Every structure is written in structure tokens, then in C-alpha cells.
Amino acid sequence: MIPGARLVADIGGTHARFALLDERGLPERVRVLAVADYAGPVEAVQAYLHEFGSPPLRAAALALAAPVHADVIRMTNADWVFVRADIMARLGLAQLLLLNDFAALALSLPHLAAADLRQVGGGTAVALAPKAVLGPGTGLGVSGVFYARGRWLALTGEGGHCSLAPGDRREAEILALAWREFAHVSAERLLSGSGLPLLYRLVGEVDGWSGEPLATPEIVARAVSGDDPRCRAVIDTLCAMLGAMAGNLALTLGAQGGVYVGGGIIPRLGDLFDRSAFRTRFEAKGRFASYLVAIPTYVMLCPTPALLGSAHALADSEGCP
Image 1 (cartoon, rainbow, N blue to C red):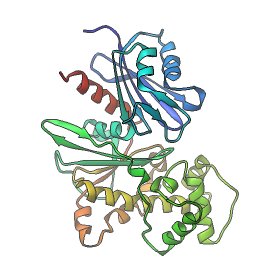
Image 2 (tube, rainbow, N blue to C red):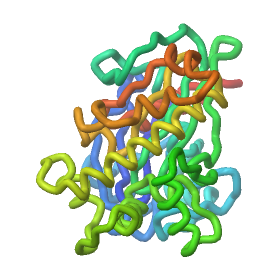
Image 3 (tube, rainbow, N blue to C red):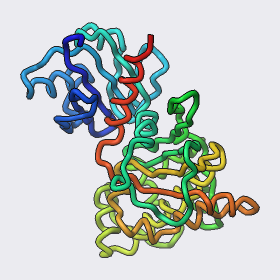
């Protein structure tokens, strides 16, 4: 065995999660750090490793909420800008794998246990069929996996930045207001942690109420507690529009292996999400409604799926000649 530890990370716009891999290649010693507390990924990795005596690294896989195809990486919803060669040099790595965070999330899907999932609605997954994943965190991630030549392969894209479409007259009014402020209204603009305060304001304008500006955690907490019907209406709107988007994704990828909802917001909603219009809107695709009815949808309950997906990606890359 080549000496040196292997590290995996899931770095979003707000939080960075780190883990070392055990002898089986699974994440352990998981810690969560605030992205805003560090100048970049090297400083965050070094702070994490310091807790364990700063063991030397030989390999790392970093899942990032950003496009990862260029040499210079710019986080979409954070201030970090960095160069992959600089990370390798400063951390002394022999191997560095950079993944889109939702591609890493997608790679975890074939390895999740039943206890890591909660099914919402009906449908039965088809073995080895494509699987799709999406979810609002600070931003809105989208990906999927398909099985080919004995391996699960992830799709890397930026589907959260596709144009958002309304599903009824009320949503069209919400989008019309958003279009006054933005030339392009992506799904992430409204269906994300960073977008939820904007959605709150627009829903209030369309529904005829106004309220004090609220941050995302407060909107979610008030909706879940049932104390604020206005916040409940905002979350219901988010779930409905996310359901329509999930149905589009299922049709696009032929995701008969299921559609999985992750990110930091939806798992916190509990049965509020299950009782929302998400599944109804997921299936509402006209002549292809029966196609969607057969596809299961799940909420991901595993707290660190992107670390698991990154671990499998790293193992796969190390096994390549």
C-alpha cells in the first residue's frame, strides 16, 4: 500500500464537509467547516487535518459546487477562486480528483441503503436504469448516473441554471415579477437557499401580502412549525416547482431507476414535503403522466452522500491503469 492518507470533501457555498477514508475506502472522521472562515480549500483542508495530527496526504477527491472543467475553479456561491495545480503542490498530493458536487452525490445513489432514503409517492425502481438527483442547498444541484460496462458513470452539468418554467397562472405571475429584475431567471434563482428570500418576496406580492424580509433558515423553520401560513405558502410553492423540474429531469434522462432529492433544505421539511404538491407536479406531464407515475421519487436522508460518492470516484480512479 502506498503510504499517505486519502481525503474526500464536499464543498458547497456555505459549508465544507471533510473526511478521511478508512481501510475499506469509506469516509470516517467527518467534520463540517464554514466556507467563509477560510481563504480557500487548502486552508480549510489544513485546518481539518490539524485536528488529527496533520497526517500527510497522498490523494484527495474534492466535490465542489462549481464547474470543474477548467484549471481555474470559481465557486458559484462562495468567494473561493483557486487553481488545481496549486492545491496539489501545497498539499503534497500525488493525485487530485475534482468533481462537481452533484456528480459526487449522483455517484452515491447506487450505494445508499434503504434506511438512507424515504420514498415519496409510488413507483418502483428499475434495476440498473438511469437515476437522477437534484436538490436545493445554497444553490440548486442537478445530476444523474447511468450504468455502462460494469460501472456507474455520473453526468456533470449545471442543470440548476436552466430556465425556470411556470406550471400555472400563479407561477407565471411570480416568474413575470422575477423577469422584471433579471434577464434570465434560472431554477436556482428561486428554488435554492440563496433564492428562497426572493421567492418569499415574490409570492407575497402575487398573493397580496407583505412581510418583514426573512432569511432562508427562518422561512424554513416557520413553515415546518406551522406558525406562519405565509412561509408555508412559500415552501409549498418551492416544492411544487421543484416537482415539475424533477419530472422534466426524469423524462430527459429516462430515470426509471428513480429520482432522488438531496441538498440541505428538503430533508429538513419532513412530512411537509411529503404532503406538498411535489409528487403531483412530478407526474403532471400530460400524455406521459403514466411514464412518471411508474418512477419512484426519494428524499435522501444520508447526511454526507457526496463524501460517499467522492470516495467511490477516488477508488475508481485509483483502479484505472
